[in-house]
Structures are given as C-alpha cells and as structure tokens.
Image 1: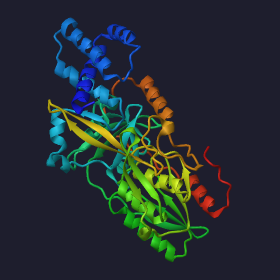
Image 2: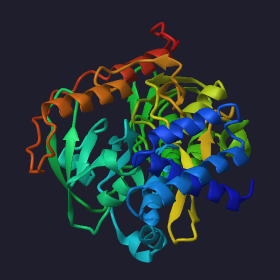
Image 3: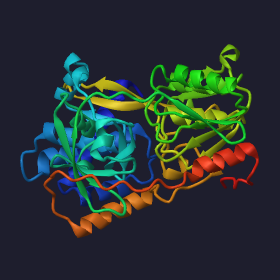
Image 4: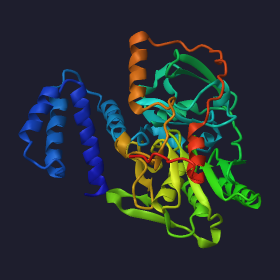
Length: 433
C-alpha cells in the first residue's frame, strides 16, 4: 500500500472514531457485523466501511459537523493507541518542532513517560531542580498546571513541562503511601553527575552511573581503568535510575566489558534489522566478572547495556525488570500542515528483542537475578493509586506549594548487596523465573 493510501486510510479511520464519539455506535456495530467475514487488514474492505461512515456523518448527523476539528481529535485518539511516544501534532506544533526557538527551552531534570495514560516519572536527575523540589522516580503526575495528563499525549505533556529558564511549572503528584502533593518546579539547566566508583569487599568495584548521554562512556572507561590499577577483579555496574542516554553511548559502555560479538540492534517494521552494533576488540578493557544493576527506573540506553551483558553471557543482571523504552520517531507532515510523530524503529537486544513492548511482561529487560525493592511500584499499583485518589478527591485541585517531607533514614541497599554477593560467590542467588 502506498504512503498516500495509508494516509487516506488513517484519515478516514479517524472519521470512524469521531462518529463513534458523536453517537454512531449502533451503526458502526451493524457495519462491523456485516463485514465480519472479510479480512480485518483488507484495505479495500476497510475503505468501503469508512466511506459509508463518512457519508452518514455528512448526511445524517444532527448538526453541520466541523470535519477539520473532528479530524484533529480523531487523529489524536488513533495515534495514542500505538505507543506513548507517537503523537499527533497540530500545524502550530509542526512549525515549532523545527524552530530554533524551541531549542532554547529547558526542562526540570526528569525523564517522563506514560503509565495507565498518566504522566509517569521514570527517573529524576541527581542535583536537578526536579530533585530539589521533591519529585521522585515512580511519581504519577496527575495534573500539569490545570491540565489532566490523562487527557493529553506524552508529547504535549513534555512540551508543557519545557519552558523558558527561570519560569515555574506546577504539578499535582500522586505517590504511593502519601497524600497528593502540589509541587512547583523551576525550569532550568542542570549538570548530570559523572560516574562514581567505590571499592567493596572481595576486590569488587562498584561504578554508579547517572546518565548515558554523550561522553559518559569515556567517564565510565576512566573509572574502570582506575579500579583496575587498584587491584579490582570484579565490577558492579549500577544503572538504576538511568533512563536518559544514546544507544551509541550504551554500545560503547557494553564494549568495555564485551570483547566481541553483537551488542545491540535497531529494529524496524516486520522485525527488520535496520542497524547492528558489534563490539570492537580494541575498545574492550575489562575481563573480570561483571554484574549489572537495573530497576524500574532503568530505560533505553541502560537496557541496551544490560541486555548485551545477558545475551553475550558476560555476567549477571541483578534487580528488577526495567521500564521498557528505547525507540526512534519520525515526523510525517500532512497536507493540512499538521503532522504525525510516529515511532519508526525500536532499540533491541543482540538477539533482536525490543525493549519497548505491548505489555508489562514483554517490556524492558528481565534480570537474571531478581531482587525486588518493596518501594518499587508495579504498573497495576499505579492504576490502583490513581483510582484511590479519584475516589478520595474527584475534584480538580488547585496547585499550591508543598513542603518537602522529612528525610527518612537510608535503608539497606539489598540489590547492591546481592550483586556483590553474586560476584563473590557468597550467596546462592535466586534466578529470575
């Protein structure tokens, strides 16, 4: 099917969605029943249904329909059903997308996605304005200003969070075990901390990574070289909370520990391999035992490193199933000036398994040694949290400043402890089933 044909299918299908919203359910149900015997992906059969629905909207709807408005609303709904990162853009957003002015906007220092249609905080950058204001990984952002995040796309939510340096953005935040909080965060630049290293028992080095953006692989390489000089024979690579980064940087980090073979892939339509990244033996540095730490706040580039270590049987991955992200989008401009920001490829493990999946069970990287922290929310718990807040306070809140809660004593890091035990052979680690 040609690109033009696909666009026509998308446009007319948007009218179907709109017609359902304005009262066409009985008719659509009848039409679908009469066409039940036809292949669901037969373009000709689908177009005939869409054309019939369009005629009914034009001829039988009680008011004169504003088809441009209907089309925009329906396209938003259609794209929202694909994945969190695909989005419909208005003509104004398309113009802003490539504008130099857009590049001057700054954020708050948090990596955001969607869970249960709400804005979800995957991770918060250490030392950023978001952390200083009290935002935490696992928080559900119910409102940005006075806009419910369940009513807008992830793209729109991110655009609302971005803004001029020094300006504030207000959020209503839901957090398990606490009352809803209204948080104000000042937009601004921030400095991501460089990787840090310490030495634990049994000549075991621990490298804490905060990001996998440009330049981080060299910092990690420097930490590995320093640890080797100090006699370290085993390394724990802590990628918990690392949700931002580049795939090429992840490949460079994995290459430090993996001498040869494939490290990562980029997958396109029909599981076609678009790009393959292989280890460069000249860039390999460490031959000792390795364990990678991940959690629900690990995403994208961090997942690529963990998956490479698992697939190449280079070491253990300890912790919790990661978030599941890592995709690339392309902007398709439509005739009306609006656009579709669509996911066109996914990052994947050396074996070709994408990190972005259709369900929680198929997303992210599953650790070889599972160690769950009680404070990590499951997707189902996020839904329960939202439902609980809806029952207790269904009215829309007015954001106000909220005092930061008192700091709690640091709990034992059971995931790091288990990773060190696994490397030192002091514990029979329970394998993830």
